[in-house]
Amino acid sequence: MISDLGITRVQAFPVAPVAPVGLSRRAQGFVEVNGIRVPRQDIRSHRDTWIEHGVPAAEIDRVVAFQDRWGGLALPPAPFYEGGPRILRVGCPERPVAGGWSFPAGGCRVSMAYGFMIGPDGAFGIDASRWTPLHASTDGWVESLALAAHAGRWARTVTRIKGKAVDSLDLRGYEPVPEVQGVTDTWWRGKDSLIALYRGEAIGLDAPRCLEAHVYEGLDEWGIHGG
Image (cartoon, rainbow, N blue to C red; front, side, top):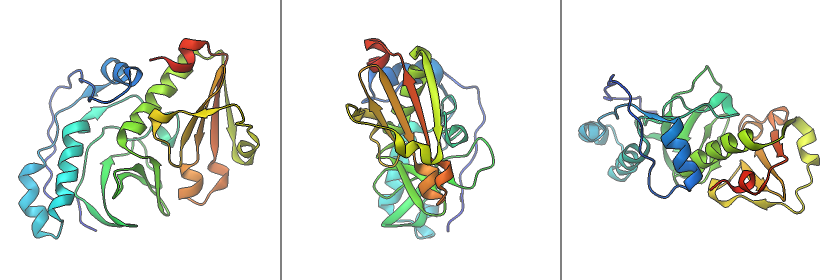
């Protein structure tokens, strides 16, 4: 495994971010109202050093692209995974994740049994007992944060269901929420409710007790969609 070689940490005052192109209006608003942007690390200057340590040029290009889009963005805590990354920022690519190279997506807010990673296909996930993709991209992760914040604000009730009881949820009549790009974690939209299913820890840590669902009920049309 290659360490966080050659990355210089920069400290400066944060600024209000501009949301990356391609997010939903809901997620754009979430990023720009609730996020802050701290200075991005200088990744390009470490390209030659990383190549000398065996990192393929194409993988460095992926890291640079992530850093240009997401680097330095700090968002409010996620409702699961102990809040998710404190700040979206890269580290040196590592091998292996099944199927290729991965790289860190940002440090944890608290001590955790896993880290947040970007997989070979661009998925955002956790590197626990096994690589577990949560969303097909970081866009999907951010969309899920925005939807959780929106649903929590507008729902009349929010119910948390844990462990085996999650399997009893009846999703008939619900449709998947496409913008979150769910892989292991998914969101489901019903007539007047939203359901978030968090399966990542249960799968990644082989710990069924960690399975959790959040059910947001009593939503009107705005609450269901919100942009």
